[in-house]
Image 1 (cartoon, rainbow, N blue to C red):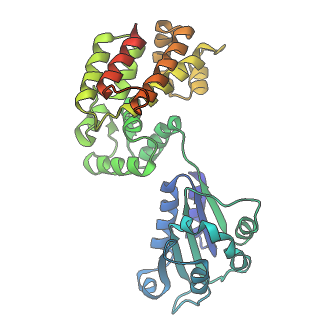
Image 2: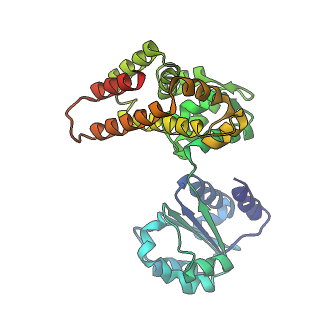
Length: 333
């Protein structure tokens, strides 16, 4: 996030580059920077003649370069934004000649999502010299809760650890989806609110009692009654609780538990760092480790792999409900 702040601060200070090449696996930040440029470099009167949005599937490099070489009309600069620029990946190296000598009165922005330039090739070197390259990296699942907290803190909100975890487990690592849900919450709730699981349930529709977070906790506690109630709820609401997601999250939990068993330093801070969780959740791993010795954890991981194969229709004709019930029985007994 610091790199993005630096880019925005540079633009605000007038340090505007002739090329911004925004690339990488996480589209959220690419869109954030591109939208900022689109809204802020030109004023409204200048945009009509001097701001253009192109799409990679509709244009070639020659079209982009031709437009970029034009001079602005009654303005200091023109802005050209190429969205979905990854569709130009086969011919992107044709941009080298322009990148080596870009038009200084043009701000050319490429939104090159899910791909990145080869650092060994001329284009990367040319843009790095004349313009700016930003690589937007995908966050790991264990980093998203902290990202949610930082975003909310910057807007004078807080969030309880369980509520943040519910969002991650329901929405995954898609920052755009999470950001949209956070925007909805911030429209409804006053500043300084500490967002908790009740707010998530009431306003986003994620059950605070019947979710993968609570299932994981029930399994770790060996609370058979609670675990069965949750999987019965999942079976009745399969759209909101896909089996593949449940298996994936349980696999992550037991993989972390296996790592926990192998740690020499089992202080809370060391455990949190090693297995990649918030210190708030570390006690759950101490309890689960007592209930599941290392040998049992390894066995559970093999059960989860079998269930994953069955869930994809390989070698079994069981319903998702039956797969989940069988898996839970094997884990808890």
